[in-house]
Length: 322
Image (cartoon, rainbow, N blue to C red):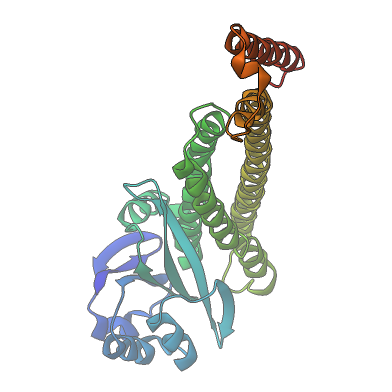
């Protein structure tokens, strides 16, 4: 699906262009094409391969989602895959992909899966005509910057959720669902970290090894994106460690609570064993039990039982077992 296909001359948006006319537009000086796609089919990608002289392996990768983030050079163009992320309505991290074809006079973005459109990014980039006049690399930077900014927004939002989870985990009204939520959140944070980590490698490679595609005045911006992605990695890892520590402390607290319950059960068991032993003797059916024939036999037996039970209760209560 074609989202838009726009020609930029000297950094200024000129017109939408038909796919069949792209090869002619690319021959013009100080001109580049920015083509946005969403899950295109194979036939359309083959047309793009002919118009932009793209490598067949890059086309094959762009057609298939679930690619690992990477940067590869094919001839005079670069193929880049980056993971995108955003929070859905259930506050879960939803991941998608954006594939870039970057050449001297074109930028093709191919979106897969759950990912926001880039209309707002395009509008902001078009306001900076000076940078847009440098070529399509600036447009690619704007998208990378937005992707990493979304990473940062996610970590900020999850940080608040983690604080609330920690409060609940240490409260007396802890629920099992919270522990399951912590487990899922740790997995999501790991996926977010794995999405941000390749960006810290892609940006310096663009700066160092593709000087023909990346203008000098843009390299500092890409280093800034790299730095932000690095901070996301650190934040995600720190939050995973916080959740791990919280789970360990919570398990320790649960173990202590269980020990307290076991102590109380053992204490009451010790108290109740006394009447159990005493009263069980009267079920032995002996023919001669002298206390059964005395007038005060029953009150004495009951009094002795209660006295021993009371003494044991006092001792166990004093020692913290009850």
